Amino acid sequence: MIIALAGVNPSDADLEKAQDININLWTGLAMLALGIFFLVWLKLSPPVPPPPREEPGQGEAPGQGETRK
Image 1 (tube, rainbow, N blue to C red):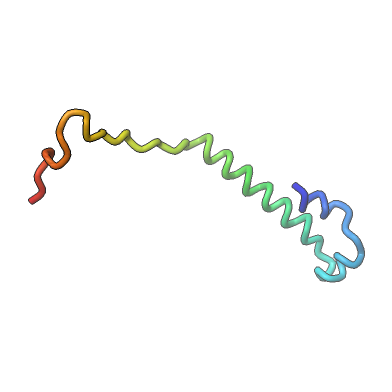
Image 2: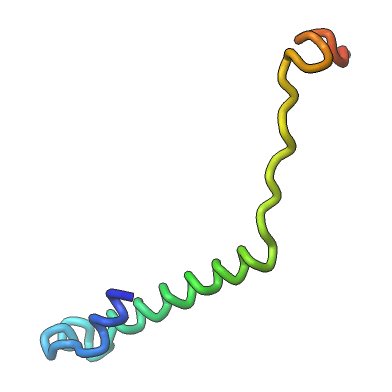
């Protein structure tokens, strides 16, 4: 947001350095769009938490579960 706001009223020196492209405005808008994209993505497909690990004191003793071959 700060970069986009800085790009709303650029100085002539800033525009001259960037070859008359308001780079602060475009970068700020791109960052804002990317942030909105990630928020929408998070809402549409929330991360699945990993299954809880079974503690050694519950059920079987450590090392007495499945045998590896």
